[in-house]
Amino acid sequence: MMIQIDASEHDWLEGRGPKMVLVGGIDDATGFVWGRFEESESSWGYLSLIRQICLSHGIPLSLYSDRHTIFFSPKEPTIIEQLQNIRHLTQFGRAMKELNVEMIPAYSAPAKGRIEKLWNTLQDRLIVEMRLKGIQTRDEANTSLQEFLKDYNKRFTVPARKKEWVFRKKPPLCQLDRILCLKETRTVQKDHTVSFEGLALQIPPSPKWASIAKQRVDVLQLKNGNIEIIYKNMVIAKFESPTIMRLLKLYKLKNNELQNVA
Image (cartoon, rainbow, N blue to C red; front, side, top):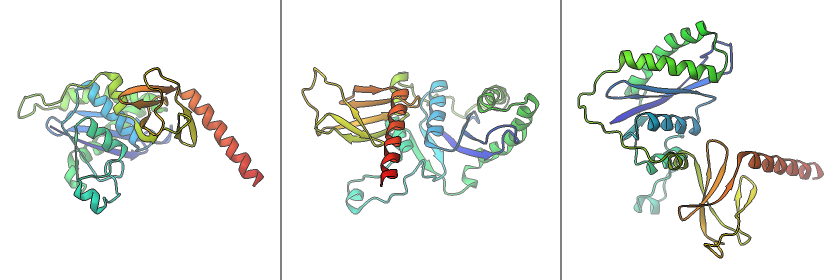
């Protein structure tokens, strides 16, 4: 019913490769472990972890974590927002709300002792395994990690007290990826453009709507770097990662030129 999630920043490759953070989760009932190495502890890292969990087991009922700003927004609600029961959500919190996953905060390290104990185990055994294999890259480390966890879960997972399966069925993969992403709400300008990271993204004409100027749309940044604009649950514009990267590069060059002139 609950998965503890956390990240462990450690010299996992003992100087042989880049610094990495192990983002992981452990089932509170069975001790089953999921994990993946990421460049840093970030929203993307935890969203990728949840994707891994959803694909292997389904959607969990709840997550137990520390009060990191990745999980819980530090922004205090106003009096009006409190009266309307509105609370600010982080990108991760918004995604979990869409999946109907309850977020439960831990108020001390001992409270999430199960996953803290797991880090001690992995920093001992997993590091030795990767040392013996001569692992030097993050991709190699992730491959080795999955092999390690397959054996670890087979040996140490225990039956739950109640055998009823409470993981819920995952949505279609395309829908799941549009939830486990970075999502912002924007207003469409009169020229049918949407502002994103300093860029003006042009929405192509549609026979369905004569104009959506001044309407609110969702701008989704997917894990693969693609950008999608959603209006009334329909994708009305797509921008592939190479296009976005090229536009951002031109935007930065233009800004540098203006700064040099100034």
